View 1 (cartoon, rainbow, N blue to C red):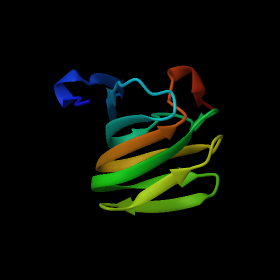
View 2 (spheres, rainbow, N blue to C red):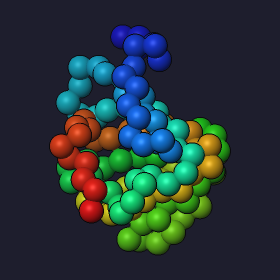
View 3 (cartoon, helix red, strand yellow):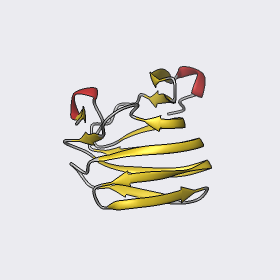
View 4 (tube, one colour):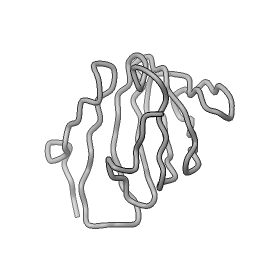
Length: 112
C-alpha cells in the first residue's frame, strides 16, 4: 500500500506545529510527520494516555522537556516517550517522523 504525502491529512495544531497524518488500515500503530518551529504545545504540556510514541528527527533541532529531564535532539536522533509521559517541545525547524503504538487518536492526547 502506497500513501503519498498529498494523500495525508494536514493538521495545524498551532502556528508552531503542523502534522501530516498518514491513514492506513492498522490498529496497532500509526505514522505521521510533524514540523515544530517554536513551542509545542503553545502553553502547558501534553501527554498520551494510551500510546507509546517515537520522535525520529529528520532535520532541524530541538529540546524535549519531559518529566524525565531536558533532552536536546538533532538530526538522526530518536526520542521514545512512554505511555503517560508528560512533556513539551521546543523546535528550530524540527522535522520529525512520529510513530505511535497502538494507533494514535486525538482523544488519547491531552493537554495537562
